[in-house]
Length: 332
Ligand code: ADP
Ligand code: MG
Image 1 (cartoon, rainbow, N blue to C red):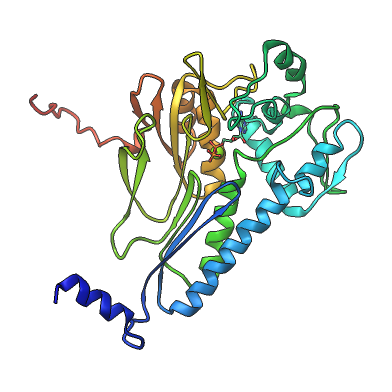
Image 2: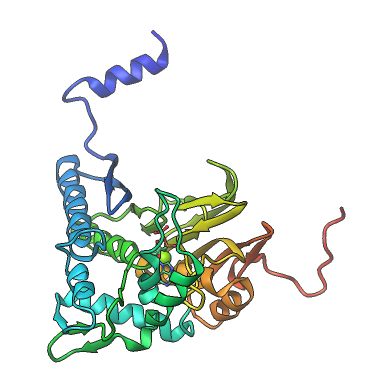
């Protein structure tokens, strides 16, 4: 009997199946692919934990989706220019966190980008014309978002103003997922939502090997990073886009111009949690390689890999091989 067939039969024989082992599940949630992979000592209990992570992702989506009229986020947007909206503590906290990223990045990260962002439809290959952009751009300004901690309310003071947490919500959901797994006693896991992942522990004494996609080659990998106990997020101009007149229209917009950012193809950020890496990957993308690398160097515990518009790869100093003083480069 061929070895592979023999192994397959062993797996199928009830009762012979080992209790401990790797488990994985994948579902379409939040408009993206959500995946959980973990080492389970007890399969039944671990399957229940994976189910809780998936439920948590659906709950976050229901709270924060800009596409559902009944989400709390949609209620904030619907009341723009009219009244403050009291919201759930979690949503309030995440909006506050988003505004901190705006302050940190001089406005490169700005959830009010959505005031022009909704004029784009990447599936239908639609983008606003110059007049429409000019009319909506004044509503893009994170300084105008009013948070009231006492009433836990959010007010968008201008009619037509909108917010969208697409640049940070998936990272937040991944962090919630990891917290659930930790609570379950899981010590080795990977939770992914689209471009945002977080790794708990290692991969049986070795690092997880995480690939950074080649932005212009389907299924191609540009860089492989060995990682454990860290979060990793990638923002790319190849995730949601269309090409028109030789120009790429994609989903990461400059809050200054309301147009897709053109100086970068992809940004990967490593850090302690996925809310941080998600917010920073979108931020670094908007800032561009030079300003992003400078900001990254000032942030402890954060590393980045940036692929610029020419396809050149830039690494932050913590990812570069150590330079020994006096060391000579290897011969060509
Ligand atoms: P994803 O994982 O969704 O591909 P990113 O983390 O790179 O994405 O975030 C891209 C999303 O961030 C966009 O789809 C949009 O919802 C939002 N976004 C776009 N431009 C900005 C911006 N300048 N500031 C904050 N969020 C933005
Ligand atoms: Mg992001």
